[in-house]
Image (cartoon, rainbow, N blue to C red):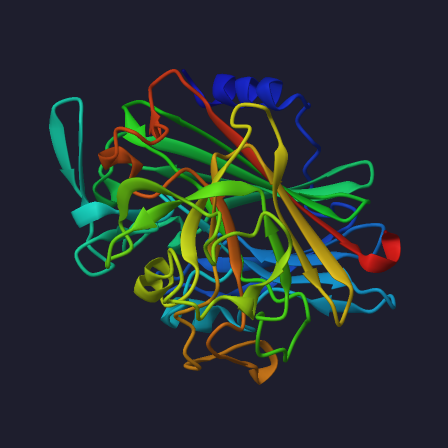
Length: 384
């Protein structure tokens, strides 16, 4: 199937028509963001919604470098962690704001078998494979097209991953769309097609701190996750294959709970999972799979009144409490990102699914369309 027909099919499935794309798209500005080691130029796009919400994103890694949203008093602040300059992303970043692929999260021993053949991937997290490998989708230069549809503005990112890249089989054509709406939603849509069976598990890896710049902790944020189980993990954060019920454990966020209230309860029931991960770094198993967009998580920051709701079509969401931030990253405006200064809610399929027969499959077959979506909706307690 040629690329034109694939694009038409994607748009029909998504239920929309191809948006207009120009270099002077209303609501979108762009400028140079620096030079890659191979001489190619990265671009930084600034997208502003009619409500004033603003996102800056670069075609290097599809990285959201800034996301400014309103608080209860009408003040706009940047609520994502990141860097001011491309060089900082190039020299080492814990996936701040990036598109992650081909496979978000871990694959045990950097190996999986498919259709009678074993594939060896890069071991970039101990002996395991993490977030697509050494040169994952977070480190490639995506083709980018800005678009507008009425009051909705966004960027379409496209990347063709060749057969064998990072050890994965098949030529994979990936398309990720960021769209900002007038009602303060960031809609992230993912599509992909392949000419050979391959695992695909794309996600968005922004670190959030709804208190804004200079806030050194997310432990006072109030979190709800609509899940009754997590995927339990071993000492290397690889799923054991078992699902752990959250009831009666520090992982129970079915009712809103302050993130820091139970994060140190390693001696509680289920607390050994906190100990092995150094905090929260687990996939929550969401209910209602196959029912379209549904609520995965809701976060409230009491000092600013900001609220973020995450809805998704994915079966899981990885809640990560910034356990590996250690103060070695000096971010935007010179802010130092210390332990637990940001959190992630990465909507995705489960880790190590290619090696776990009991997990929902992540194998994309030729002729199939990978098509999923996640929405980050922002509001304040003044809107309630």
